[in-house]
Image (cartoon, rainbow over all chains, first blue to last red; front, side, top):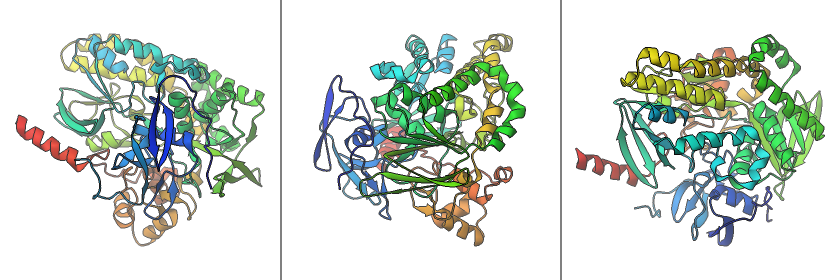
Length: 105
Length: 448
């Protein structure tokens, strides 16, 4: 079941950025954090713990690490500390971050 | 910011490393963007613009999006920006690590849809986003402020669920005469409460036994007890708050001695009135040195900068003392209200030491039951709990569970919490990639 956003959408003014999240295309105001854009898109979880527990952004200030997602192949990225960028590819982080498959060299 | 401005005015070369994308910290976060939606946030927030303007004119080098992940004696800092780390040495370093909201653990606090009140305020400040159909729960000045800001934005909370009890108010009462020295702040608080009343927001007082569950549609069902009755509220967002605690990862990792602040139920770095610590070249200021709010943080920053100017030979001790008079008066006035606030909005025992089924360490899914089991098997301190259960070993490095682990170890008894030594904070205090660390080593060898 699709879970609607728990927030009113951000005001539509100024430039926007378009990015991909779990296969969907999302348009968000430039300058807002990825975590804010994801919260505006849906009220669903954005990561799963190693035990399979569903989590989403919690503190929005870089303290709690609940907003961890995979950005352009790099896992363990704090969505609340990352600004939305045109063309970024974002995926949920499922379980523990893995050492293989990341593209940060 | 105020320290950087004072130091630069005094003739020092200043580098400001700020983890956020724009200067302003959390209180004045994103104030420089001058969003139309900022009118909801009030005059105090807008006053941050003055500080931003002064910073822009000060000649301070500002590096935003710069995460400090190591502080050494020497002193020197290692910091990361856009995936590249570098080392900067200086004769003096001022740590202004700020504060975070005290974790409010209860069964269901990890569900998507449960967030902190501060998080909702950050969304208002940075993205103009307002929570739909929200319940605010907990206690403390920020809870009232966020409620009032939501009312001004035309999106009032559905209800305010307050853990404050008449007994807490009674304990706070003896501190009231001193708090009158900060009458302005008291009046502001009364005005906020007045606004919430006038808006007709439903208030539940003396609330306890928080629990949240969620259904298929993602809605949160929030249950609690108030005045002996079990209450149930359904909401899209549950925003909790139970005051703020100092962020001490940086100061602890730097090896500064910390002391227990019983009134604020938190450890803080030991320092003199100028913010000088027991580590040579390291000062602390702001909420990261002791919770006092934005005005107190500005004053403490000025005092630390004046002391650094004295220590670096730019001004004499006499000049420092004379120039410190205004800032010291501000600090005295703004701190006068703290004992009252600390007593009136003290965290309840069940938040400090929550029921068994509550997840305490969100990173590693460790429950209160597991921690109590660990204690029955002999664990008596943070280190044993961490090494046997992994609580505090995830990416947040204990920021979300240290205070609760301490609460459980002392069975919610605040008078015993100070006896438990604070856990060690180790470098890197924020996660960075191995690649970044490896690149740093090469860089250091090149320059050696």
